[in-house]
View (tube, rainbow, N blue to C red):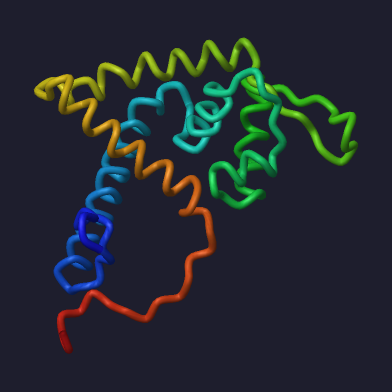
Length: 176
């Protein structure tokens, strides 16, 4: 193992597990606080965070038709919940559905021009609310944070999709 950085070594000690827990707890807290703040900002548009997330998914790949099952997989959500949210977006004409010639049981979903404009409107409402969070950060700090978050996102989107194994270890400090 000579020459390999410490970061490649297993993180199995109590201190490391506690640090991992603190990182996960911090990510969870950030998610909760940011989601709550965004939800308040989007409420006047009558747009939920679940709807915003689905519109975001469609927006970043606007030219690709999508099936409900693929959206549910991509968002790691159960299909009935995604179907319900998509139905509301269809009713609002933010998405449109067309028959899938390859599979008549399935519908292809598309972001409509109204959906694109509505998503942009939502982003315009969110941007000033969140700009204050980073107003004291340098561009280098933002780039560093972005790179680290992207690395975590890529892991969660690839290896993180694998079925987690059952582990019996705990964060307790007893016995170690």
